[in-house]
Every structure is written in structure tokens, then in C-alpha cells.
Image (tube, rainbow, N blue to C red; front, side, top):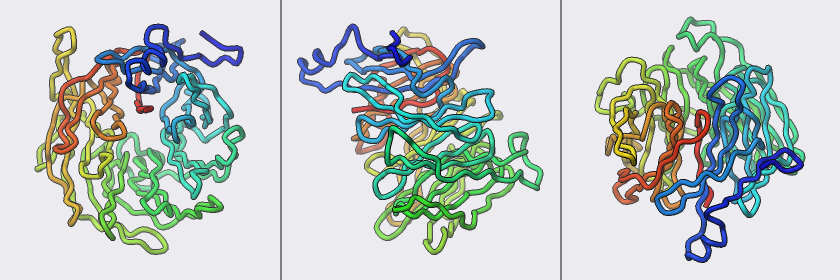
Length: 396
């Protein structure tokens, strides 16, 4: 139901926190952001509670807007999110309080450039946020010192590429904001411009300064990226939506970042081609920093058996191990992710579970994962949610 502030309270009627405590197990929540599926409807953030082999839907909140596309949880009680706000010129960045029951209440909201799709938290006190804005070819940064009054810091719109590319590359399209392991740099993979944009960060003042970008071959389409640190060495892996490739770099620090390529292959690895129409999606290192996992969309190269026994097409989720000495990766497993268009997935804290969304199916799936081998195992729970799910995160 709605509160007097218009925020949907996500309270369970069937599996309460008290019941969870009585069972001796702390409750495990998942938050799922969704786009609207049909004209005239709204997306939102759906709260799910994992109870045994069931994902119980606790309700939908509008605290992040009607077209939320990214969720970042800081601690257990502070959520930051962005709303693409189709078809408005501007999007929004929201600060949201997570209540003891898991309910979401918007604390403050700020305007962004159009089409925000990613958030990275930075600064000495985690009091800065960088936002990548795919729809407008821009970025924003915010001061989060007071979550109840987030303040704009830096806005920048990038020029359109001058070299012809794919249809999606007629303008700059920053697709993710990522902080490096030192916290002193931000990068923005720009799918439209085929650039890894680099910014130097002042961790105290939160000011950002643009540095030299790293250029990729035209029509590569860098989407998302993940840093890996081993001893004194740092590596960066980038997943490319248009070329459907993974590229690994060794990172050298200076006034900016120098990226030296060490790995380049298809997302399937070992030179294996991907089906026509495929679009690479997400990339994340496991919590123990030993495995790199990615998803590939719209290829339907796998099959997945639902709990009711129905077999449906599925895209893959692919795992690689990483050599801590060289930074090179080796294929470990390709398995079904549970449906089509897995835009996002995430690990729980210890890496023993993986949650993924299959956007085309409206499905959320939680898998067991073997921490030692990195392999994804049997399904723990699955649920179909309202709208088109685009991201899922754990709250433990």
C-alpha cells in the first residue's frame, strides 16, 4: 500500500522478519529495478525476500522513479538509484532510505542529464557519486555528504563521434561509471565513441578532472568494465556490446591511466564465435577476486528448465578464472542464466549465490555457486515479476 508520502511500503504478509529470526536465519532481501512493460504502466523497485526455495514478492516502490535502471546499496540502509525517466529530457538521481523492514523511502532527488544508467560511489567517505548517462552522452557527479540533500557537482556532455560507426554510435554513450582500486580514478566506458574515458578524482573535495581517454577500434562498443588488483599490479577487463568481445588491459598509473592490452577474445572465449544479434551485457569479479563472470544477451544458445518443468530458451552466463600473476583469464563454465536478455547479475557477500534477471522473460533467478571452483550450480529460487527487470542486488 502507499504511505502518505506516496512511497510503497514493502512489507511481507507471509514471511515476516520476526519469523525469520525465529528460524535462526537472518532475512535475505533482493531489490530488482524494472522498466514498464506496457504503455501506461510504470516500473519501480521490487523487493523480494528469499525464504527457502521461494522468492516472495513484498511489493513495488516508486522511490526510484518510474524507469529505474541502476541500484547501488551503501551499507544496509542507504540506497542510491537513477531513473531514466523516458521520454523526458532529464533523468533523476535519488537518495533512498532502507527501513528496518526493507521498505524504501526517498530522501532527496536531483536532476541528471538524460538517460542515466549507472552509478559509482567514490571519495574518502563514500560521499561522492558518479553517474553515466547513455541517453544524452553525458556524465554527472554528486555530493552525498547529506543523503537528504544530494548536491550536483559536475556536469559534462560529450561531443558526437566524428568517425562513422554502428547505429547506436551516432552520439557519445557512456554506459557505466567505475572506480579504480585506488579510488583516485573514475572510468566511463563510452559505447558510442569507442572510448574508455578517464577522470582523476580528488577524494577529499570530490572534484574530477578529465584525462586522456583510451581509444578502442571503431564499432567495439565498450559497455561495462571491472578492475582486478593483484599485489602491485592492476588489470582492467572491458566487455564490449557491439563486438561481443572481452578485452583485458594492464593498468599503469601516472597523471592518468595507461592501458596496455594483454587479452582479446570473444565473450565465449577460445575464439568461439557468437550468434548473430548477440549483445554482450554485464561483467563482474567474484567477491574473492578469483573469477570473472559475464552475461551475453539475445543469443538463446542455452535452454533452461523452469520449476514447473517447462524448458525455455536462455542466454548464457560465462565464468573465467584469472591468473593472479599475469592477469590472464581462462574459461571455466558456460551455463544457462535462466532466460533471455540477462542485463544484470550480482553475487551475494560470500559469493555462494548469484542472482540474475532475464529481462525478456520478466524473471529473477537465484543460483547456488561453488566458491572454490567458481561454477554456478542448481537453482535456489525463481520468480516472475511485473515489468522488465534490468538489475538485481542482494541486501543481507
